[in-house]
Image 1: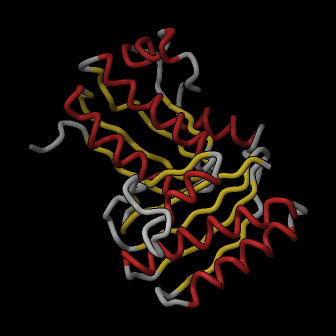
Image 2: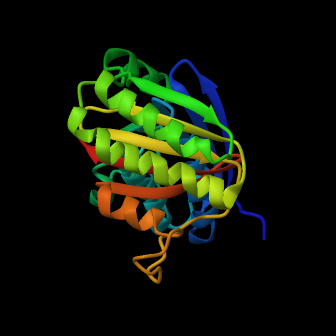
Amino acid sequence: MEMAITYEVSADEAGLVGSVVGPLGLSDVGTLHRHLLKSLAEQPHALLLDLSGMLVAEPLALSVFSATVRQAARWPGTTVLLCAPPGPTREALNGTAYRRLTVLDSLGAARASLARTPPEKMPVLSDELLPISGAARHARDLATDACLRWDLPRLAGPASLIANELVSNVVDHAHTMMTLRLSLRPRYLHIAVRDGSATEVRPSTHVPLDARRGRGLLLVDATAHAWGCLPSSDGKVLWASLKR
């Protein structure tokens, strides 16, 4: 069944602009949420959601925007602004359930807000890696370099372990080119690996402690403050964060 609502995304100087058009019902939430997560997977400084063409068919469906903002706060730290002119959609978003959302009258107002208080530009280190055995070692070196460069020596060990396991997961399972990206936010160090496989990954709870393979995501889960897997336009992104 085709979704009754459409989502189109474009880029401009403010970041990414996502336009949501049509009547939003509960049956649309899953597909729209996936589209929104794909926008976050691009790791923009800001995501502006134009809701001027959207109608609220079922108010509970607006929770999709709350879920997106929560994910953005965990990773990648993207500022999400909702743009809804006065009218029924804006009135629905003014409810107490959505008080944590930032809602502005228009895209112009959102761009002006970002111009007054621009999102902090984060230091970034990234590299393209082949799915070969030496990729994990290179990932460890890049993570160590980032931590030393950003004066976070105590995070070098955990960051290297996480980078190693995320890259090894691609080498062992996805077998595609990948991008390793480390970025520094005010509260967290983020480590993300983007690959070309859409298969979502989860940690296994049935791996023997002496197993040589398959424990990678269990180690990430035990080491990271938070971690997860998001769909991207051409695969997925595995991400993890460490408290500074």
